[in-house]
Image (cartoon, rainbow, N blue to C red; front, side, top):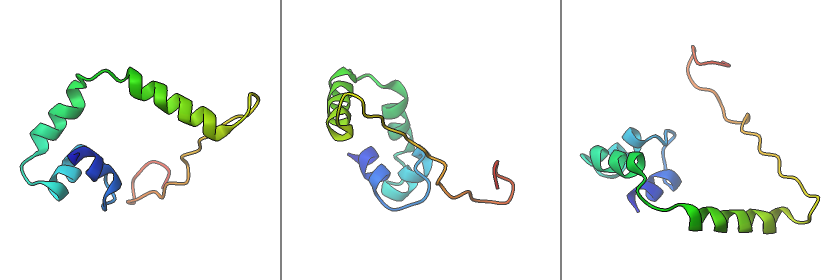
Length: 81
């Protein structure tokens, strides 16, 4: 729940350290361990995501284009600024 809250909650940076600082001070190690080890079986979730994406895109000949270039760049020396 802490990780999901960090992803959907406020804050520009969604990496583990900033999320841990915003949500629960001192929980960085626990959150990092949870993400880095990945001891759960992702197959049921991946199957459901595929089914939902297929339903949303619609049709046999439909295509889904994902373009992440709309994210604003920050800083003065970042790539692409």
